[in-house]
Image (cartoon, rainbow, N blue to C red; front, side, top):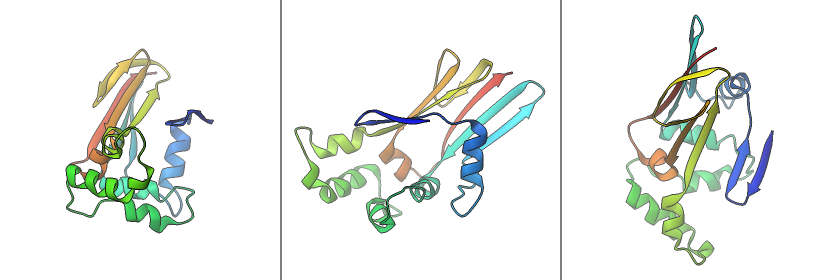
Amino acid sequence: DAELPSTDRLTMELSAEDIERVLTEGPHRVEDLITVESRQNEHTLTIELDRTRMQQITSLSPVEEQSAIEYLLPPERMNEDEYVEYLAWAMEEYESETPIEDVIRDARIQVRVEVPGELLSVSGGDADGDTAVFYERVVTLLTVREPTRWSVTWRH
């Protein structure tokens, strides 16, 4: 299920099995993005994001001109500030009341994982009832050298 509740938000509801199948099978697989470990009644879902995986995820985009997406991805050694400046230059024609640098710097990805049971722990994010909430700035995910790891453990 997917919806656009506002112009800046895409909400999708997927099962862990669906995500795992889409991202681990076929020509667009993203190796080791999501892992699920189960021991007795405890399960841990781990998401590991880095520059390479983010690039692989963008290849899943329905945008037909993939080179446009690749053009906007940062060169290998670019840091966050340089990347924001680079994107602001590339997108200056889209600037509105809010400076484009602020829009780019503040763009975040948020992942909410609702667990089917008792939430035991969250690493790299916050707990909100039976839901783990993870978020990171997009420019950080695309420029950081160390992977971002999010995990949630629950009892079923």
